[in-house]
Length: 255
Image 1: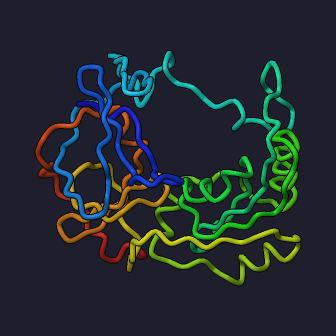
Image 2 (image 1 turned 90 degrees about the horizontal axis):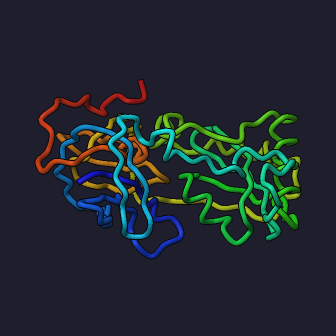
Image 3 (image 1 turned 30 degrees about the vertical axis):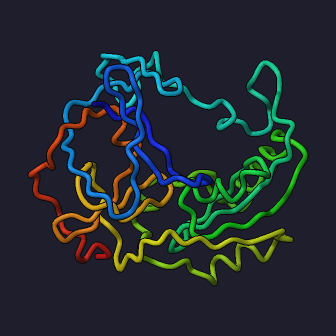
């Protein structure tokens, strides 16, 4: 059984899940809070390709994907000059700010209808809708200008998000950032985790599921709380039975 993908659960009525493949068939392993996971990690290799419930395996040792199966969404690199043969992003788009505790902020764009879902996919603690524009090209131009002028990043690394878990957003810094804009709407998100301290980043698949925040899976094990970037699980073989490896306690994670 190999992990070949994951679902954050954002914008869905179902819980987050790992997508696992056995003999060419993909199934969802739900990550609802309270579930006990009891897998250890085996070898890691390319996750191959997934088409619905069908899986085409790849034996290349490059993980999570080899060169033949790695794909980068071309629009993620766009700054207003379309990189496709023909522009196709004619739906209304939103330009937004997202906040990650305590005071990491980013600018981003998404289709207007997906705005709240996009915040949750990223595990944002706060969101602000800045502009609505008629297509993706205009949105990317604005995003690039804001990223350069403020300056503010257009991406936040998962370790930075994990470091801020269990903390609250610096409201004064967030308010200052928004004060220069005619904000169309603001959002605040809860993920039901009730963390008292930052979890310890680990790559494991055993423990009690506390919940998910974006693509980060929170597990309780041996009295500690651990944060797993689900992308880091992609490509691993899963074996029945929890790993006996000793893990660092989350106590004092704030330092």
